[in-house]
Structure formats: structure tokens, C-alpha cells
Length: 218
Image (cartoon, rainbow, N blue to C red; front, side, top):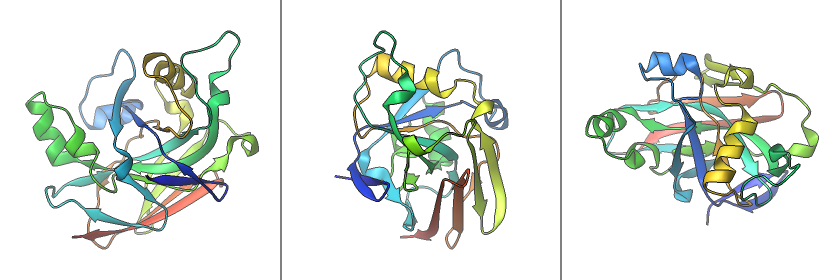
């Protein structure tokens, strides 16, 4: 099974939930509609790639895009909201990651009204940093960024979200149930773009977490 690292300890990954269309500027740049509720999709656990790894571009796509995001690691089960429960209390750790998207495949599938799994769930499409324990985190909003070959490409903060973290977690807990080891990719700001063989990608979360990845083609 795939694992991520929380304060140096391996944690087996469960479900990988992803929130789409959670930043207005990103919705505008892709000419999508603002959703009336959180857009949720999933990635398989085999898509995980930890910091320092090499992203192998899938053979079936020639237009893979980076999407930098705040990522949450769930530390305890939450099947809906209990009375008086603070849903953020189920978060064990915070990290930064990439939701990689085969944009050419996604556009083709959307035109046909088909699921996005091939565009979003390929190997190495869920890249993550190590996670810092929630007990050590006091800063909100969270600021995160992505540099491609040393050039700043994306910078976002959680105040820009259409659906804030509590609302996202409540929706997931109520509709699907959250389990220890689940990951939640919380959406990307504007500035997404193509990655190519030989690229170096550097991610940073508020001085709390960092990650880097290189890009290669099979």
C-alpha cells in the first residue's frame, strides 16, 4: 500500500479525495462554471508520489498540467458531524502537493460526458510533501506556492477558497465518511500550466513543508 509521512512516520494512505473548482480565478482561466456545491473526485492510492520522486509522464498524454494544492491528512474517522464536533479536529497533518492532470485527456472525456479517472488518476498524479502535525500548526490562512525551474508559477492562500476547509471536510464526512489515512486535496488557484521532461518542481507551504519533484518521460 502507498504511504505518506507525518513527522517522519509512515502512514498508510486510504482514500484520496480531491476538490475541484475551489478557486474562482482558476475556474475563470479554464472557462468553467462556479459550482453550487463542492466538486469531489478521487484518485487511486497508486497515484501517490512522495517528495524527491520523479514524475513519469504517462505515455497517453502530451499535455500534463501541474495544480499546486494544500493537502490534508486525516487522523481519525469522522462519519458525519457529531454534536459539538470541530471537523478540523480530524486533521492529523498539513502538507502541500500536486494534483497532476492530463489536460488533453480530461477535455476529451468532458466533451463525451465521461469520468475523469484516466486524466486525474494515473501513476504519480498525486504528489505530496511530508506532513507537519496539526498540533504544530497555528497559522491560517495557509499560503502555498509552486516554482517550475525556479520561476514562481502559482501562489495561493486558503482565504481565496470558495468552499473553506471546514465546509470541505463536512461535505466529505457527511457524504462519504472520512477515515484515518485519507488525504484531501483542497483545490488549486490560478496559474496552472504544462510540465515537461527535465522540469524541476518546488512546492512550499508557509515555511511548514516543502517538496520537490523532477519530471521524466518513460
